[in-house]
Image 1 (tube, rainbow, N blue to C red):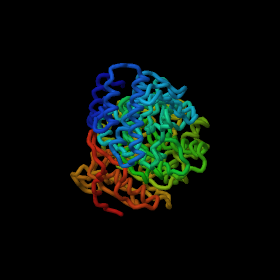
Image 2 (cartoon, rainbow, N blue to C red; image 1 turned 45 degrees about the vertical axis):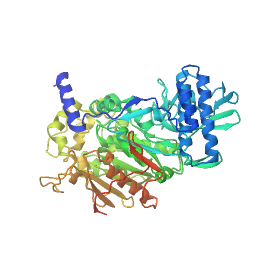
Image 3 (cartoon, one colour; image 1 turned 135 degrees about the vertical axis):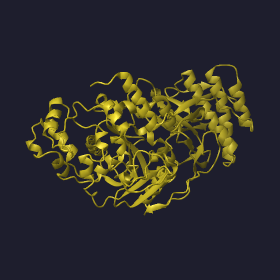
Image 4 (cartoon, helix red, strand yellow; image 1 turned 180 degrees about the vertical axis):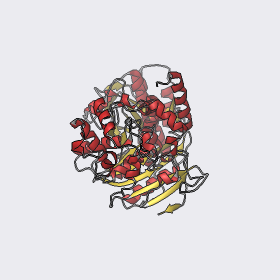
Length: 583
């Protein structure tokens, strides 16, 4: 029976509000930062910005006058913070003028009137076609103010240079240039310096995830950075929440869109951190954790962030098989890469569980009475089933961190909202790529635990049923020895029993008994709802684990700062971790 569209819309709204809340991920407000005339260079800046004439070359020339003056002051006194701020501010305004006037100084230098003669201004490029400035909007990060559930803190690093956001221009698809790039649209943080050689001046960009310090005006300075602006702008402009729900409730429309991608240029010496999101989410929900961890110079030095995104309406064992294929392809592209550290949230933790498991034939035998070669489906369908039910642990995984992982399923999946969600989601019509293959596999499967025959392929909510045979079977297979794993479990503060005796400890969606996994090197309960991957104490615990992984101890984060919006501070205040109940 097909439900009326209005009813489905109402149910979708109810599920969305009850499960995820209604706050937006990010919204952006464009500002016009003002210069303070606290110095001579500041006074020059104010005059440049206040000039009513619109000639961009004149504006850039006056801004270069201010930047040159501030640069000279820094040469004489590298601790002159006002001169450093004036210098950074002037560069930001220059790039605003370039953007608004449509200038292209990376193609040929432009002449700008200056105090001591005309400036010759150019932008240096590295020759990489994916870094071609003509493909991007390059704007100063200080013009963006963000508000939203995923950008509550702004993580910045004080230093020399103007932090920028380079965002790809509309209509481009960067995945055609680089399969593992972050997405069709690219948003990335850069830091720009302008170097003076007489009346010639050149803008040079640096990646703050690769460069910590730079030589400037005869001294070494920390490179300034804004680790929030690029992510905040991407969330505000791409609005991923809409597609998250579509990929959950209409997964068939997104078949074949699962992908493994990196959030930064690949560096062979850095350990990849693989973030796997949960049901109804996307890589966007990792934003607070990534922003915060990038504020740690040790993390920046040793790690790089990757993510796996997938249509969450499909059953997670099928998506885990897709991830294994993506990891194989990644190794072919980057042979010799460091082993992954995996962070799995919610259903993403269930996928991560498969990465450290040798299934043997146990899962296959739980579904079928005949071996794979005797199942009467096409070779393509048989291959999909074998890859989904028969697998080995990944030798390229070195550690796993589970965050609110629904390893044992959730009673919510079989409750009122779960049943409504299943009606909206339906069943995947051709999960094996062919409808006939799908129905043949369904008919060949053993009856359910209740004795009832299987009538259709499962969806992701079916896979979260605590009595689901895949769950009950894999949870009786111990993780492969030699790969350490950790568990971070959320509790809303109401407490409760750790087993199934009511009332149970829960994060609102997943109870403790589901998230707990025997053999974890550490287990930490944090006061949080289900999205523990956004909880400050959980993020601090992930940082501790990552530092321990490379033989470091967690200490204060410096010199980066994580600061509330519109506030100035020089320290990152990490919350005290909740006591570990298993360590």
